[in-house]
Image (cartoon, one colour):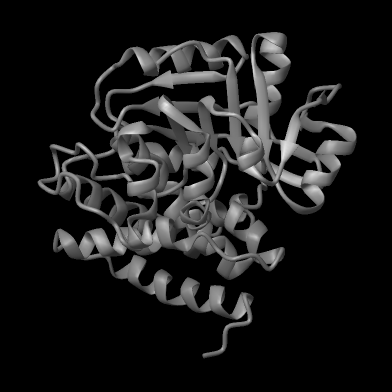
Length: 336
């Protein structure tokens, strides 16, 4: 991996746009940052720049950035970040593949189970098993390759409040790790770059454990919020909703343990963290209200599928999957 000069954020929505703005603000002329966006969001970024507001900070960050909806207009990149949701990534396979050189790494900022999950996974007994639900026809596996991936778990609440403008409740952190668990020079170089850009980075030799740790929250908070329209604080203060959330978290933890990657946090520790979250709309609730497809496959369905693979009972998750799948179909106007 050579110098990290040309950097592309593929999907400059809430999380991707936040990373793009931090890189431009923190590194200036040291890097050339391009973003892939679309629609009104793209138009406003081109006209006014990318704006990131952080609660409690007086001035927003506003940066000019090269923005396009066509990755073929960009040169090969030294580093690519994806800011897409899991169900959006397969369609971007060819576009991302156009941007990479032999040594380009792709940091996949994803919620839930990622398409590359079993690549070089020596703990589960399913090394390099492919997940057709997340990567139909092996588009990502073949066009990008799991060997390029740096896994990323983002603890950063963010919302596009209007085209070109992103609102953060606070500055968060990003956890990076190699699928192999190795602490490589590439991982170090990318972490150092982001740290220089004032992004809080944690490197881990156990990215799968970290994926499951966050998934305990996402697999419970997201579908419950979309189904009930409840904000996160309501879910942890209403006794019935909290009890359901706790059951889901325990099931997620059980599946992770069955695959040899138990989360570094216990269910109780994650519940204590959840109690501190304010009245925030989850990403799935935001998508539901905007009548967008819901990101339930990597957050809920894949946990159920992996539970079946390991003979782990997950009755609460199975119920949520049936309900959230139907809600997604209705939200998109699918009647058949």
